Image (tube, rainbow, N blue to C red; front, side, top):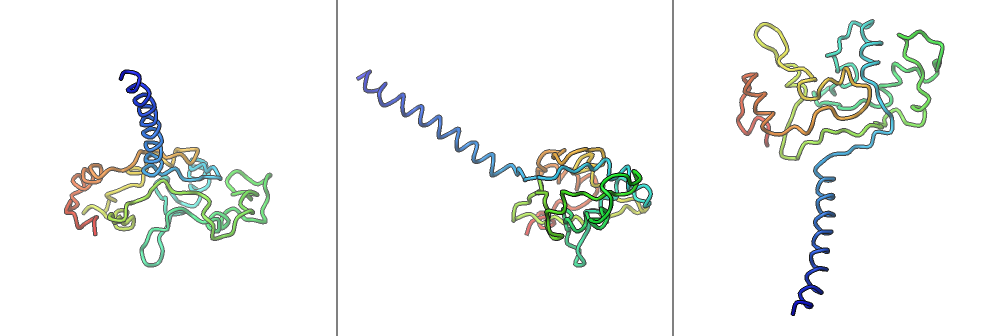
Length: 190
């Protein structure tokens, strides 16, 4: 009897353990977005080196992360957006530090490509408008929200790593409360 329990029980427990480990890793992979980022990007050098001459501040993420004409957020820039500053026929070296140099690694992409995958992925039942949030102002004209409130200090980052963890509904509700925005379900959920 003991031997039968051991012969059946031990393989069952081992199989159960491996099934748990495999399913846990699969679930983590689905729940956590691990986007491919073949080109490393240095926000700090772009914002602090190039943009002050153009009158832009470190909070003006719209220079690269803009909106479509209908108000929808474009998200990550395309290679065409990059080459609008980084001239594909320009010098690779020898240009002044404030002049965007040619980036040879961009030549392997079409202008419409977005080589960076996004960490942000909203479930289908959530509606979030960057334009509505980023253009909301207080009575005195100050903006209610900054990119860094949700995305962390990207202006100071030197790589493409995610700076803040996944946004949870409680964090959104706390922000809505602090900024006097409705927490009614229909504001964010269809």
